[in-house]
Amino acid sequence: MAPLPPPEPARHLETQAALDARKLRFEINRLALPMGVEGTFGVIRHPGASLAVPVLDDGRVVILRQYRFAVATRLLEFPAGTLDPGETPLSTMQRELQEEAGYSADRWDPLGAMLPCPGYSDEVIHLFLARQLSPLAERPAGDDDEDLEVLRMEPAELDAALASGDEYLDGKSVTAWLRAKQLLGLG
Image 1 (cartoon, rainbow, N blue to C red):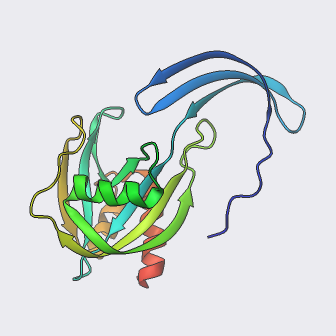
Image 2 (cartoon, helix red, strand yellow):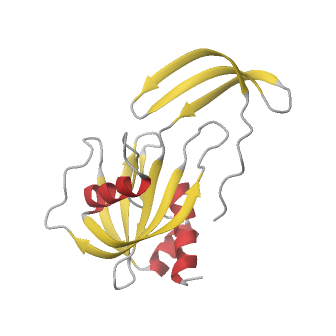
């Protein structure tokens, strides 16, 4: 996966408003864009995140059915989490795999990074393929607001759910699954 091209930052003229929330900051800024246009732009500042596609030795994937309040429904998602201060993307993912799915992994392959919403957020999500999984005797406590169910699905079953639209998958999970399938030779 190619790295992002060098940044062409806009010239910051002023911050008109900012709101700090849990794990993110919303800013309204007056900017001069690289092509010379000036305007007011809202942006969500995010510390970054990591996501893993966990694959069991028998080929099934570990995926979560998780409630998301913003869309008021449960989605299929791979384990993921926000980078805490001082964490690397990999250490974040190792922690999240244990907290959310109840597994540790001995093999980690990077799948690159993705920008989920570059029109209004600076979030970068680092993607991994986690293999050689071991179930934990007890799943560590995760975030208080997490409502999730751990599932194990055959790749064809996940593909069918994605194709049918009967289950919602978030964009980061779709991207990671497509990249993982290439690395796993699943087409």
